[in-house]
Image (cartoon, rainbow, N blue to C red):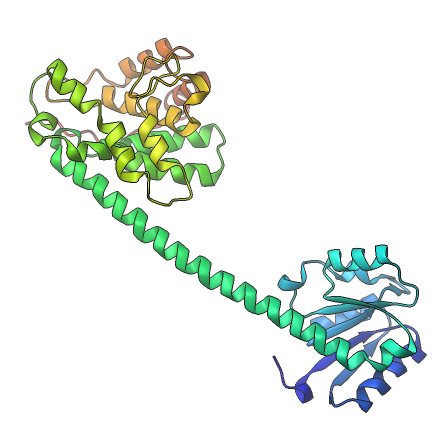
Length: 345
């Protein structure tokens, strides 16, 4: 906050007697304040553009409009505090002024003019308090953002660790994520949801970190027992992520990405909208990528076969809207995984 002798007041008052009363009151106080006085909103805007004041005192009704027109944001976002004054005030007008962004409101009288220096001091203290709180919130948000980035980076490293243990599906999570994000964008999901889906996609097989590497890299079909063991990976991934505080339901997306809308999926047999939308998107993307890619126990059926599978299951085991969006982004909009899935030498 500036020192008292450095403060400048922009007074917007079209009644010369009232403007003089403010000047005299401030001159009699211990506030050695510079006062610039104008009589219209147009002059006020020009004065602000030329040199913003430390505080403005605006008459509610002016020849070319009302003071509320100058209040364009909450007081904590304003470049300086504004006090609104009027000759004939009521509670409704006071509420309207405060809601519009005034830091304070007063009804003009000899008494309030005599106390104008206290009004200005109070307004400056209140505004500076709001500014400090905003700065503190910004610092807190920056700290939380850094912590969030550290947590998500750690989680992504774990996801890469899974792929390092499973060379036959290296890149699977990244390719699946690329398609899942393209589907989400085609469906018009908000950016915040897409960010959560992106992180979940990059680590959706995280639970495989607890699987024996011999099973993950087995060059032949899994036995029923081995397949049942692999099917536990969504639950295990959820167990790793459930206590991590993130702004998105990443743990649930990972938990549900093998569920199917007819209830035939696993591990909980969820149906329809019991499965969150991000997981329904990931389920389709996961299926397409898996069928488009080579596995040690089979060749790649290919992207055409994958799309036929999605068409066949559309509205049955795959969400109808998600499946339609997937078909559009690949067939009509030219989506491609770009980097081919690794093939066993």
